Length: 570
Image 1 (cartoon, rainbow, N blue to C red):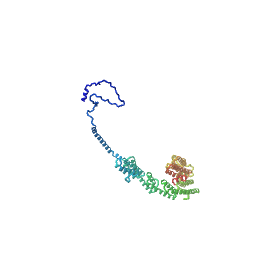
Image 2 (cartoon, one colour):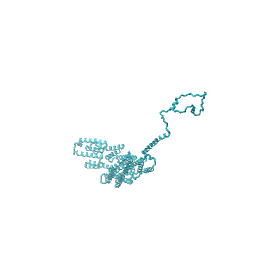
Image 3 (cartoon, rainbow, N blue to C red):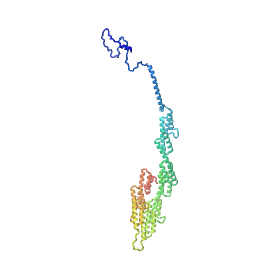
Image 4 (cartoon, rainbow, N blue to C red):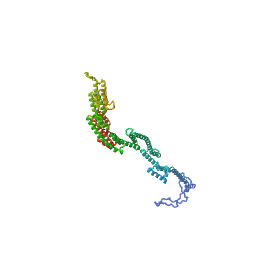
C-alpha cells in the first residue's frame, strides 16, 4: 500500500513521440469479441487494482480443502437428527407400519376368521370360530384394522342371531347371543332394545305358564268352551305366542273332546247341541282331520230330524182339528208340540202351535166364566199362562175374568138398585198413572224388560186395579204391533242385535202371529248378508258369528245351509 501511495504521489510527465505523427483509429473486425487493448510499454511497473468491498476481511480467502472440512460435521449432525425423528415416528406407529410389511401368519389367521364368519361359525358354541381368529389376529397386531372390523362384524352377526332367536321365542339362545354382542360391540341402541324385548318376553312367559295351567285345569274339569274354558285360555296363549306347542296340543285335545260330544249328541237326537259343537270345532280347528266326516254326519242327522219334525207338526194340527188340545194325556196337540220344542227349542212352527193351544184354552176359560164357573176358568187361564206367559190376549182374558167375577160377587139377588162401582176413584187414578208410565216405556221400546217396569207389566198392573180401563186394554192390544214396527225399523237401520231383541218381544207378545215367520226370515237374511260381507273381507271369525245368528232365525233357508257347509259350520 505504501508503494502504491508513493506511485500515486509521484509527478507525471507527458511522453510525446519524437516525430509527431497522426494516429488513425482502427475498429478491427466487427464480429470479433471485444478485448481489452494491449498495454503499451511505458517503463512503469504493472499492477491491477480492485475496488474495496465494504465489510470485507483483510485476510486472504480460505483454501477449498479447509472449507470442506469445516462443514462436514454439520451434514452428519443433520442426518443423525433425521434418523432419530424417523425412529420416533416408527415407534409411535409401528402397527401401521407393520401392516405395510407382509406377515404370512397374520394373513392366514385373518383369512380363517373371514371364512368362519362367512359360514356363520361365530365361535360362541364350538370354538374356535370367527371371533377367536380375529382376536388372535388382534393379539398379533394390536390395532390391525382388518381384525377390528372382523370383530365388529361378528358382533353384528350375534345381534342378528339374537333377533332371530327372539322371534322364535328361544329366550336362552337370545340371551347368549346378546351377551356375545355386548362384549364385542360395547352396547348400542339396537342391543338395548333387544335386551328390553327379551326381558318383556321372559315376564310374559311367566304369564303364559299361568294361562296354560288354567287351561289344563279347565280341561280336566270338562270346561271345554265358553268363559274361563280350556279353549279360551289356550287361545290367549296362542295369541301371545303363536308357536306355543303346549297350547296347540291342548287345543287339539279340546277339539277331540268336542267331536266326541257332538257324536254323542247326534246319537241321542240332540241336533242343536251337535250343531253348536261342530261350529265350535270349525272355529277353533278348521283344519281338523275329523271335521269333514263330522259335518257330513250332522247334515244327514239334520235332514232326518227335519222330516220327523214335519211329521209331528202335521200330527199336532190334526189333533187340534179333532179337539184333542190338551187331552188325552201324552197324545194331545199340546204334548206333540212340546216334544218338537224339546228336540228343537227354536222351532217357529211348534211355538206358533203352542200359541194356538193357549188361545183355545182362553176360549174355554171364557165359556166357563160365562157359565159362572170362575174357578175352572182361572185354571184354564193358568194353564195357558205356562204356554204364553206374555201374551196380551192372556192379560186381557184375566182382566175380563176378574171384572166378571167382581160383578157377580157385588150384585145382590133380585135387586132393583144399580150395581155399585167395583173400582174406586183412587184406584182409577192409580191405574191411569200406570197407563201413562206404560206408554212411556213402550215409546222407549221397553216392551217386556225390565221386569215390573216394562210396558207389558205396567199395563197388567193397571188392569188389575181397573179391569174396565180402556186405555190399558188398548195399550196392551197395540203392544205387539209396536214391537213388530220396532223390529222393522231396526232391520232397516242395520241394527241387527236390536232387531233380534224386538223380535223376541214380538214373539212373546203375539205367539203364533202370521207376521212372526216373515220377520224371523227377514232377520235371518240380514245376518246372512252380513256373514257374506265378512267372508268377502276375509274375516272368517266374524262370518261364523253372523252365520250362527242366521241359522237361529232362518235355519231352513237354503242359502244359510250352503254358507254353513262352506264355512264348516255344519
